[in-house]
Length: 284
Image (cartoon, rainbow, N blue to C red; front, side):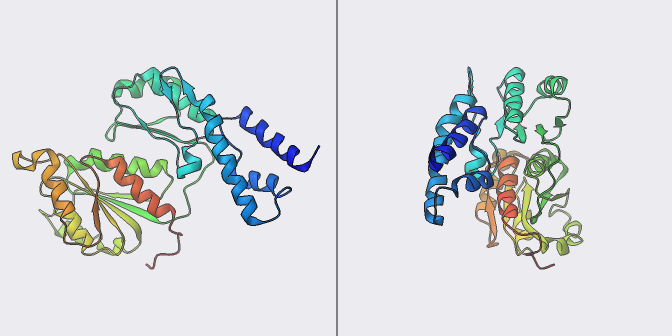
């Protein structure tokens, strides 16, 4: 049997017996026996990953769901489940399938009834009633050795969106801290935390009403500030539209904005930034 055929049989067997390809290090070790140059090796890896995309769909399809088990290979993190409108039984099956694939799980916009059903089957699931999330993490995996994220909420009524961002970052295993209720109606409350900004890879700023807080934070921070507008406020807040427009038109150069009440999206973007930032790279 040729060296190429032996390597191919080993990789092909691994695809058939699992929900995806072996990890990057294993693939490289197998393929180095066949490909002599780094360029050839990289092209071979790319081809195998494409094959894995096709083969993995056989293992991920369910009667009412086509789960993307290769997303972690492509994007760095597994697929996140949007819980709203899904049956508890479907959520449980998705979590079980991800566990079989060795993936961490996050479900957002979850009802108490869904949480209760999941906990009955998966007792290790972490349910956050405030955030409306379910998180299941593989045992033995530690927090990433990377940059940290600060999540700031302007008011207590913004907390559910802020907690969704926090749970997202915990699922990503990114170091995170939450500061609550430091809106601009009492700016002195923010001052005591300003020194902490310079130690962050990114800041998630959650605010409703007129959403002035991200601009203030952006005036102190040297890292990206991801604004998350909330639907909190009186009539002219227009269900969060005013807050979103305020963040989009912020004078602070480092402020960007995600969708209304999108704590998950704000946390995820911050986590991507932090995961690419070495822990010791930020001057304190």
